[in-house]
Length: 72
Image (cartoon, rainbow, N blue to C red; front, side, top):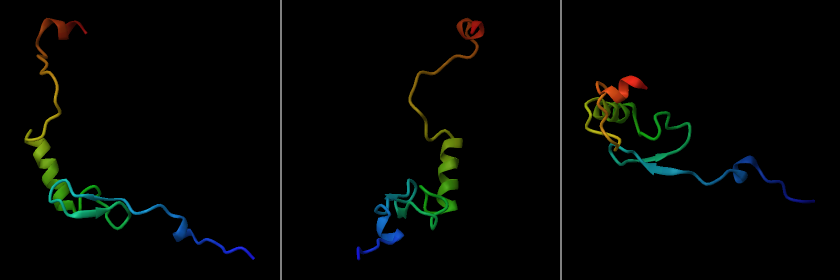
């Protein structure tokens, strides 16, 4: 008779990553609801960094008052 495989044996390996704020190891599963952050505190710290413009996405600055922008 063939051996049966359980669900836990069929799952893929755990994905782990470092919290973007404190670098603590985070496992990508339901035990870490704030993933990729390790906690709500780290999530809020990161949000504050974006809100205060300490984090930015690279790109050209746009002048919203220029004539080219008004015609679009």
